[in-house]
Length: 219
Image (tube, rainbow, N blue to C red; front, side, top):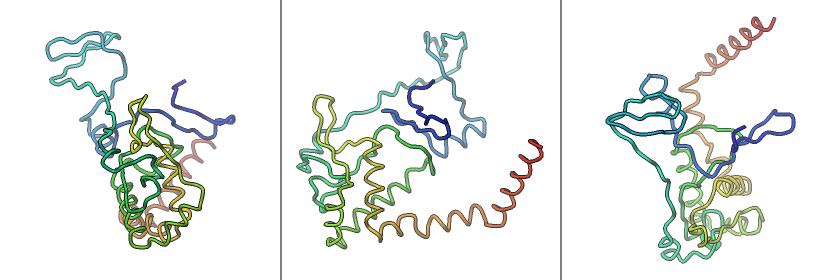
């Protein structure tokens, strides 16, 4: 079993929970489909000129080898923004300060997409909303749903570097209690993109075809 994969007792749902974040996006899947990218899992035994030799005996031709160590947050950000503890994306419950670093790790049961841009759009709208409508901020303060995150110097982790669970909890809380954000973030853009890429009738025809195909296979 893979350490990051957790299921319920009936094994009907699965949750991925890990400290590292997988670096994938639409280009990753496209590159695999086009034969431009190959995923190889295993341990490296040694390197030679333009080649990687695996413990399994496989030899992989390579012109460049990158070792990715990840990153640590910079405490200068905490000092610059005078952060004692993050309240969602806001330092010390102050809606006038907004600090975003992509949450680290993975904590999810489903993935609506792998692109970064939808998340950025939501963050921008959340930040702007309370600058435009500051009276709504008290609703967030009183809701009791917002996660908090102080600095953790022992693990070299500044306050502004939050994990995936913190990010998910914050997004759900804000979009739940602030009605304007609940309707604006999914909004018209997502609807237009869905209908342009998957017109309703074609989508229904494909659903029906797949359903009937399974029916014929299992009959």
